[in-house]
Image 1: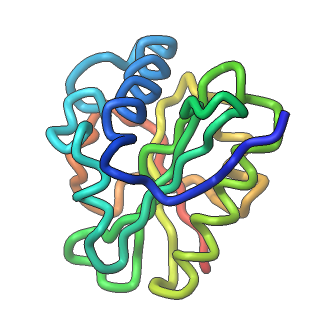
Image 2 (image 1 turned 60 degrees about the horizontal axis):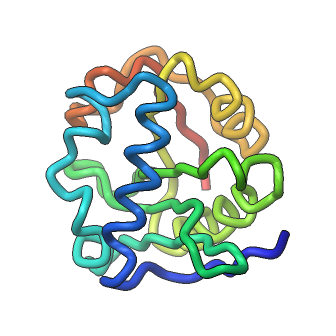
Length: 159
């Protein structure tokens, strides 16, 4: 299936929130300490319009959003960005669209930062394998407090 990748628009906020919440429920992460409790979840087009930030969505042929990924700064660490809110619905997994989203995100990140950090859940093993394919390596502890205290896995890669 072909997907259209583009930057988020305000009309996409609710659809992106639905994708993220559906994925979090799927992995038992619908609780505090994860993206579930992020107060900006429905405001992505505004949040990711800031300098050094960007969010992209993947649409299927019907125009439905099936995934997305963001890059944002880590407060207090000037040269480090965070890969944020990377989720794809089950129907889009294994299609290559996640790799396309990752390439967009990393290309953007390289222009603004020196390293890219992420946090994920221990039970998201396929996601961890995917991140390792893109050069992310596991860290023993968080770089700083992002508020996602339930995310047991932290990874980083040079850009």
